[in-house]
Image (cartoon, rainbow, N blue to C red; front, side):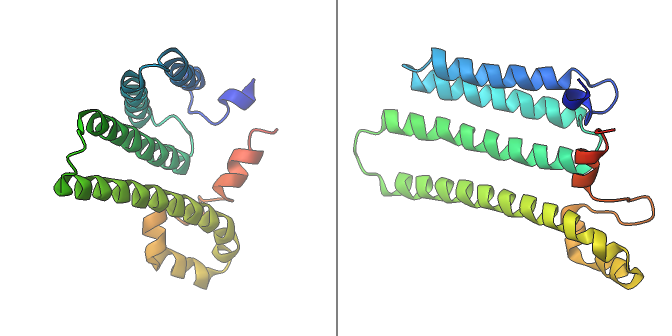
Length: 178
């Protein structure tokens, strides 16, 4: 059972069940409202916003970077779903008038969503690579000083020092295996 609850802070064992409820809510909305796309998008958007709010409030993971990654992923998801509501209502009200301003706005929203998704993906990959390869560099005192001064440490939220042992991935994968 520790596999399900091991990465959460003490007292937040219920958070995994809450995550399963979110997934069940998404599946229910997609399945039960399949003929009503507007209601489907609206309901899924609200489920995502509620989960984002609860996650941001509790920050359930023991490791801060996991909370940051989850919050970023939930934000991108909620922003995308909220924008789907916009596109759905525009499609329903568009009478084929071909308003140039509306088309530019839609294109702008689309590019913002694409850049937001790609930016999050790059940030997540950078954070993971920084965590994996930073271990070797932290062993060298000169490299550790460089890592603390380098702007990437600010972007990734890394704090290096004697209290930081191993990588986040090692901690997540191997600390609960005992």
